[in-house]
Structure formats: structure tokens, C-alpha cells
Image 1 (cartoon, rainbow, N blue to C red):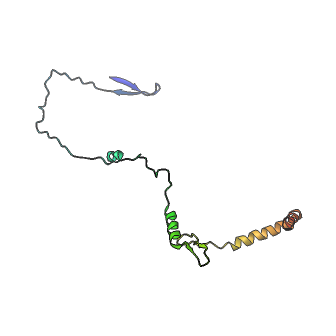
Image 2: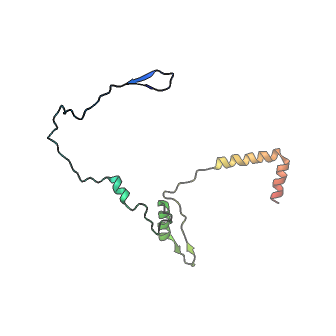
Image 3: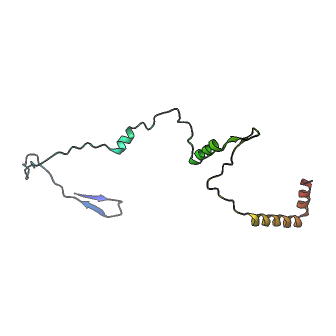
Length: 135
């Protein structure tokens, strides 16, 4: 049997040899008598997980969970939120541990101040507006 495969402009053919089996003919080989069945108690972890109550509704479903930092903050407030001698409540600043020091931005602030000064010297209207704002 020959069959064309693909678009008409391509000449690709597939040839197969047909084999017919007759049910009246006896098989050439005798059936094997040495067979055995294996049975195993196997639990598929995927199926087991699907049987768990994955989509079970509880009363806490709509409450957002706390992050690690939220838990540390609440622990810090529980330990260090106190009333001082004057009767006022005193709370610590909630810095992360270890606290990251802020980088020095003196050079950037100085550069921006110099740029503003140069801009005001060049444009007297802007300088007048700024002096009007601070009066």
C-alpha cells in the first residue's frame, strides 16, 4: 500500500506491507505457562494529596497571614511597649535587625543646592518667585 504524505508539490510516499491474520490458523508458538501476577499496595502521592481537604473552607480563610517581619515587629512591641514614669506610652522604633545604616548623601545634596543657586542666578523671575514664596 502506498500513500502520499504532505503537500502535493512534495513527493514523499510511505509504503507499508500489509499482513493479514487468520483466526482459523493455529499459532506457531505455544502459550507460555510460566506467568505470574505481581500485586503491590501502592499509594500514589499525587492521588493521596488530591484526597486531602485542599479546598476546605475555614473561618480564617479571608484573614491575611503575617510575614516574618510582621511577627518580629509584634514580638518587639510586646516586649518593649511600656508606660513611662509620666504615664505616657513609649514604643521603640521598628527598625529591622540588623539595622541598615543610610548612606551619606552630602555630595548629592550639595550638588543639588549648587544647581538651584546657579538656576536662580540665571533666571531673575524664578528668583523673584522664590523670594515671594518665602516672604
